[in-house]
Length: 264
Image (cartoon, rainbow, N blue to C red; front, side, top):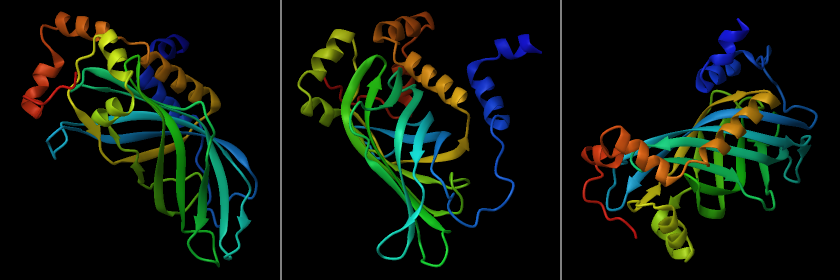
């Protein structure tokens, strides 16, 4: 049995671990957890990728997300509502874009960690509540950093337990490739040096779902996988496409990528 688990692909092993690694709460929560804690979370981030001049996404990215957060004990604020503050201590997202033929990763930036907030929606009980996630992060395409220290927020309401379960979080972290190049004069040089040839695109507002509590070891494994995704080069991507007998971007043209402007 040990040998079977050893050779399972990472994605299958992750799913198995997520299903059995941390048991869910056995009783319905009636109030916020009374003490502070460190939480480890896995979720799926869905982000529409829209090409310049289009309104319909060329594809919808599905990124695996791993987060470690530090939650403080709840207090009653000056307006009489119960709340708790927390901060995202580590955050890694990774996935693949077939339209860009590249790995996409997000990573918490090496800078100040802003406070996030969970607050009850009424004064008499803690639930339902709303929660706001606040993070500053970097975005990579393969091994090239596209944007540095971009702030973003995510929001959910109707929260009935902490950590949140069975809710959809509004993931509002927009990104424009064209704006990124305009704001960072050195980005074009980095991409040219890497051999990148990308169409003009943007990430639209997305969602975060399937939040699951995991162990520290599972978080570390997910973070390591994201780091591995950032080692892929554009040269490796081009070689893989040629080996398969065609350009991934070319095959994607039928889905809306045809004749879109490329920013050089």
